[in-house]
Length: 361
Image (cartoon, rainbow, N blue to C red):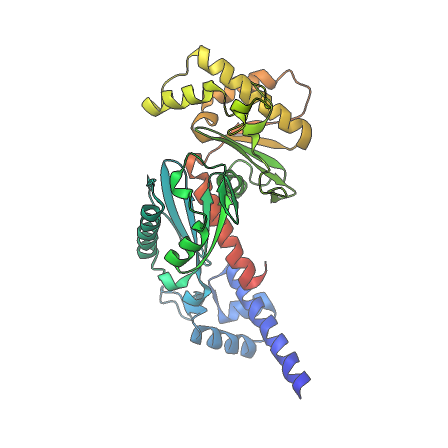
């Protein structure tokens, strides 16, 4: 008897998952359409739909169609994407049915307490714009510069508000859901493969050049973080200066090059200014050298340049000219997502996690 009940429970769970999977990939669907899509009998589908509607996993759509079609309800939950960088904070939200909202960026506070207050307010705004309740939030993926680890965030000196060692726990209490911290450029790499020029590619990098420097790596369709989470910290490449010089120990030889700071300062005054040759040439040379160093090791299909410096058309053009004579097969392009990359990647990661937890596909 006990074995029969267990088998019945397994079959019921399998059938429910098939219904949820069909709705995710092709919904909203009527009961008859669900029966056709899943191969389950109409009585079985009717029983599953009634049960899942009663538990708020499903709900009829609001279009008044007869017979009604069904989509996901509030119990399916929603995910939050948060991006924190030295100058801006941005929050987005997505439910499993595809409803998405991306809020406007706000200036990054310098204190952890004010940062938590701001993220809470932006989350409330996102919930109001989508009709998602705070109690529906299941997961928040938070993009941060540097390398998250149990003792805090390393290599994020440009963002004082991230200095708290228990930031992940503080965010979890403020948001009331599970929180995962992730490197911003790694999440930008996820975004570029989701909605950017790397869509359809399984092996690519995203190289960020701005106030900071970093790289996200995707191999075989999966982000590569490294044993210590520091894969892609290309600021430490031995380019432009002696990497063992103590003066470069904190930021790395490449990131310590003055041209990056000079270009960043110029673009802050006028984002549309044409870069003079005395800045463009050394800048493009360093970026091209970094790309060649990475390509010689990883041999990927595509390198996507992002950030306020890297995604400029004049920088991209000169970088392509510099690498053209090199006999390695490689392609370089600019991001189409701009500075939205990390928050879009955080949102994509949160949404993917919700889908995996619910239907496993």
